[in-house]
Amino acid sequence: MKKQYLTAKEISEAMGVSESKAYGIIRELNKELRTEGYLTVSGKVPVAFFKKKYFGFEEVG
Image 1 (cartoon, rainbow, N blue to C red):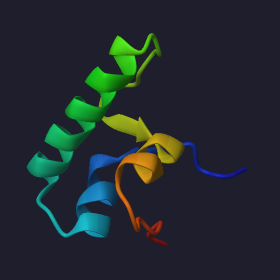
Image 2 (tube, helix red, strand yellow):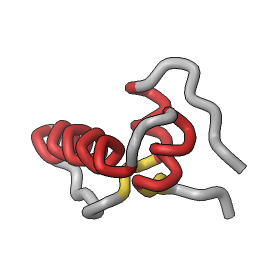
Image 3 (cartoon, rainbow, N blue to C red):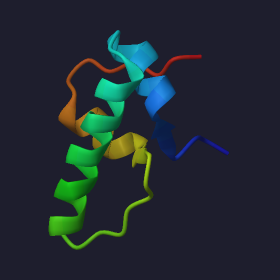
């Protein structure tokens, strides 16, 4: 089964930012999802939504 969510560690590695910055990105994206009526998981963001918001994203590993 394909991975559905990215963690802060995976985002930090993929984008070359600190984990604390990655958590901030996750909070921002999850806030946007909640305003659109979606349920979110703390500390993770859906892969599909992350790909939509960040051009050129390639999954690590």
